[in-house]
Image 1 (cartoon, protein in one colour):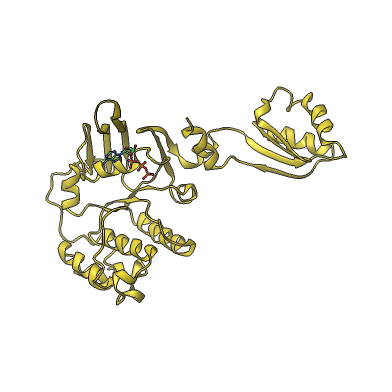
Image 2: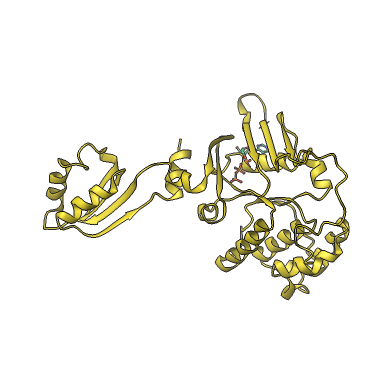
Length: 323
Ligand SMILES: Nc1ncnc2c1ncn2[C@@H]1O[C@H](COP(=O)(O)OP(=O)(O)OP(=O)(O)O)[C@@H](O)[C@H]1O
């Protein structure tokens, strides 16, 4: 059996893990830095339950509290308040038993070792030497196994860290901005591998700045801002949460302004907020909940190049996190 499959775990975990405990259970989590006036509430009352096998994207602007949350999820720092359980266990026990691992932004690699040596040494710590070859293969490191870590690009070093995170065959994988430094091809390859891992039943929680990564990869997205969860749900629904569609078309005739004025008095444009209507030259752009009726009206008056688009996740994200 492929050493990477989810069913080949040879050493059963002796911990008294409740069978049905969720992959991640975070309750009332809080953590601040500094004191007095300067106190920053980095994480300010976060509740989050992630079911086993879920893939969840954690989105938020810089300083939203994502890394601080992930650090506590991994047992790297202690909360001021609240509790974290991973598979029913305190995070450190989950890490010690190899059921939880991570690819973090920080944490160095030893520059003088080769890629192959790095993976082999860490595999030794985990008692997972049989997984070295399949993990190297899966993460695309086999062709550069003899290269010194110091000669690897930023993206390659991320792949090495990813390989190290896979070595213990974890049930829960936490990734903090995993594709930083990777070019487009490497990012695509990385997510292909992650898809395979998730299909195999691993739970994946990842923080990212790339909205398209959440959109393409995570069925569920959690948006954080100022240390709190401001949205949590199906990624597609979140995208559509602003409601409506954007309808764009080129207006006919020499005086688009006058055409727009006339349209303004007609349903469904009549009554729409001005902020949702923009005219750039002859190109009209309208956000509306009745895109069918608007499209019909525009075609009727001879508008051209009609486009109807759902709001992007980026639009939803900006609306959710702007102050
Ligand atoms: N060790 C620390 N000491 C003081 N302040 C900190 C510390 N770690 C984080 N903070 C502050 O806590 C807040 C949350 O930071 P955090 O790194 O968790 O955000 P983030 O969402 O991961 O941001 P980014 O996307 O930039 O990585 C920020 O205001 C940050 O400056």
